[in-house]
Image 1 (cartoon, rainbow, N blue to C red):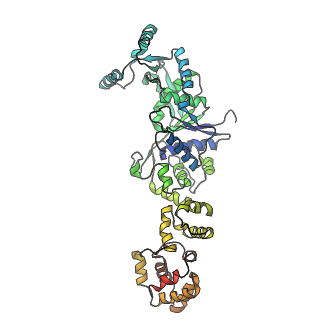
Image 2 (cartoon, one colour):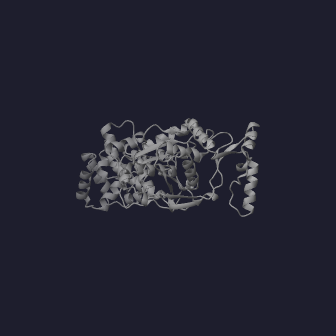
Length: 461
């Protein structure tokens, strides 16, 4: 790997299922690594909060990423296994007097916060314990008082960084206040672990949600104090529903598990997310490699990106039609009748696939071809009732001779009663499938059990 290689990461907390917002972050980081020569995409499990982290979510999120084809380099780093490294870094900061113990209770801090808000001031730590001398700190620690560690923010600085999405930013250090890097219970703060992990893993670029933008100045201070390299940060816009509100279950399925269980294909999810908050002139269904080639950091948008279920439906249709024959059979495997041989399964899937969006859609056509014909819908019944006299009798007689050969049946009917066009095909489709829309009839009828075509036509003679 070259010294200038791009290294990105996805760093989920295993406290719940992956949802579309998480996955878009993972996708954009993976694409940036794939786009760059010698790029590497890493996975980090941010499980330092043992109370909220659950191992089955670790297993689930890795399975979700593999399902999407977002594969990572190296063994995933686990924060729960890195407390020794965090304590070593905190020890360096203590030795340099860049952090100090804070004995303020939650009640004291809340009282300070209320007073600041009442005075029209932004709430930040008042620096109470920063001014304790070494002897006072030592005495209180020796007495067993619980203490967090706060970072001593340098005064008079302006922190400047160039966000990959939002552009140049400047934040006066005075606006930050001294912030906690280790809690009173001994656990390191999230943004401390996050910054140290990025540096230790060699991460060069970190795309993450807008909600982390306020953490960036603090993390830059931490890394500078430790003499560690900082990645280029980019903060992605919020993912919302079509109504502009934060994406939630009322907008439809939003977790990878829900989508996968519904039969949504990985290509549909990826193509949708590629275009949410990332402008693209590519209208066609793209592979992951094609997305990586087209991915451009300058195309990341600052405005919230709106999830539209209709767009997911569009990409699902495109993905279904792009499946190879074998992949299409595998996608529908659990819903296909068990008694079908391999050739019949393949032929059935090929015949009905143009009319499928989700695997559940297959049930209707399994019934039409291999089972009991469902009741005719209103349109189909109207076509049956309006059929030309003698049409069904001629068709049934033709089926007696020609079996499931739809072209031969249609030719006989056309010659016998002069029916053609919709007057010929609509009543036949309605009688045979109870629907006026559906797969092409000729390949579908070839799959009908022997005698079924004639029986269905005879009902109307």
